Image (cartoon, rainbow, N blue to C red):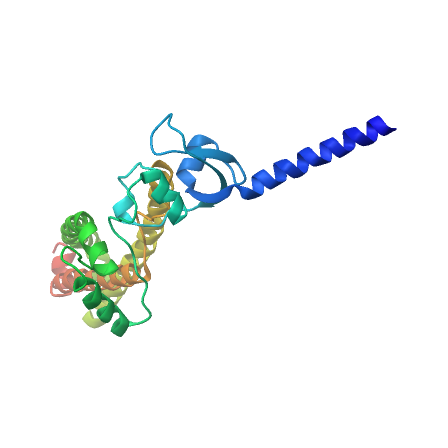
Length: 276
């Protein structure tokens, strides 16, 4: 009985000692890319050091942080570890020196005051707004966006010309039907309205099919590239503004093409349409 009690007390003391050691270990946060590649989970104990194989600090993984949807981080394959400031200073050995730091402000007045104070603190200090840095780092994406816009304009113009040609051919195939309607007493205006209405409905249907195709394509693009770069950033977006623009442009082009095709048809005499 005494032996069992002594073993239990020894085991309890060991557990308390391990718990105390575990509690004394400071926590860090790592990004999800590092956690996935290294097979780490919350609660694992690891050693961080400035150089591979060198001595370091024993730390515990307290959190796994998801990466931000930042376009400037897409091409970077680096890992991120968030440490306490004194830990970072001891590991890096640079003391009270930093390359850059971020300051949060409450409003635009405080922002301007902070910019002036930091820039006037000492020679070599330069403060920038976070949105200005984001604009500079996204310059490449602006070029790509303009390139895509140019391709879109060319595609829209070519599609409009193609739509007009198709409508002219389809309307021309219905010459005998239109001639029969005209001989029955149907006015030019009624014939023209029917052709324009049909062209507008076809344009609206095409817009709906194009929107569905665009949404599916965007979803596939996002699924693929989010998996490749392991980022929550969305690479393709179908916004309500894009849908409204596409619908308005499609209806306008369909209406214009219908008017041109219908005017060409109704101005021709019925007997000429019948080939007489």
